[in-house]
Image (cartoon, rainbow, N blue to C red):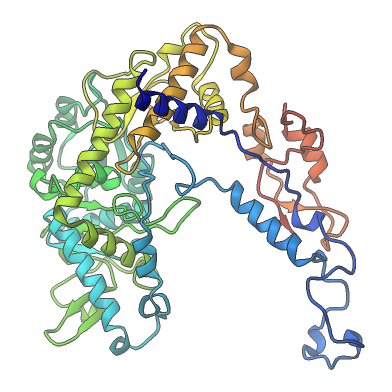
Length: 549
């Protein structure tokens, strides 16, 4: 082997060996001691002799907070932060999530005082720069999609879906039509049919072909005067480009319906394809995916919605305009000249911090950079697909777009499942990929490397996956069933953890009313199975969020 090959092999071996030191971290309430504090009061200070400032609301009993020194506090929260898995620490291969690197330039811009210190109730005259930034971001989103209008308000992808479908409902009402159905491919994100149902539509499902794409003939048979729209993701959740998308758009429009595109996977085509050119009428864009603003853990997200001319009048409030002299924020329907806004979706105007980050990302990449983003994202996914399809099983022939999809056929007769593979992958130092989605593929493994991962990182991940696939086929089932072995907690009864969550800490210091939930120790017996890590006799297993009462 060459010197370069030796170095590469050593790097991969070292990454696989990185199991980490995961310290057992008790709750902060379990670490305190009576009388301990992280500060010193002046000599002779007696709190009981201080003049009360709270009147009748002054506390009469103990506050119930732990007594801790400064080092204890610092170490506790530092260790908690180290338990948080994020894109800044390790490759995050979640399919359909686009967990890409968040450039630090974005963060620097978002923290500039002129943006970071804004208040949403400031006079319009004092936030002209912020409104200009929103307007400029809106311009580039419209340019990249070929759409003439954009609603910047929505705070996430599902919020954007609701916005787009509400605009469609408003447009149909303005036409004097009452259409009741929305057609959705069976591979769609679950939020698509949920959004349609939330707006009062009934949902018709369109099956996929053997190639993993929308069955055009079935779609045409379901279109009629009662269909309001199609909600379709492109590239779809199988990681495939819908080859018939132009014909789909033509058929939908011929039936008098609208084409809603779920833009969750826009990262695969940004800078290369304009959705408007495909016949799409409305599409949400996940800034927290395609344009690298941070996400995970419930937020913050941002889901602007671009709209065709036919839907632009129904854009929600508020929105930014320019009167030739200053930027204005239109907040009332009476001021929305020439428009029929369907209403308001939130208290203020979108996620300002996300707007700053997304515009920074767009301007720093430029047109050629965004073109390369899509190109490299697709290249990386196909590298993963080509490197694993001989030991795993791909459900569809040919190349993919931004994510590689596998099913569980390669595990047949092994007695193992997709979940077993995912748990074993944790012991290799990698976060599991998206599992069991899309639902149209049995036991799915959905892997999205994005454009930001290096070949060395992908090689290490591929090596780990190949090793696990081969061990599974060789019958090393016990290793899989014991995984993960190098985590503070082992496998839990996930169903009971979801149905019987322990949401309160009920230790001896808790100042609370009588508890109906089990204590932490009862939860150990009730919810955990095989929870101890190796050499971790003190481990306990309450597997859900616990807070002090």
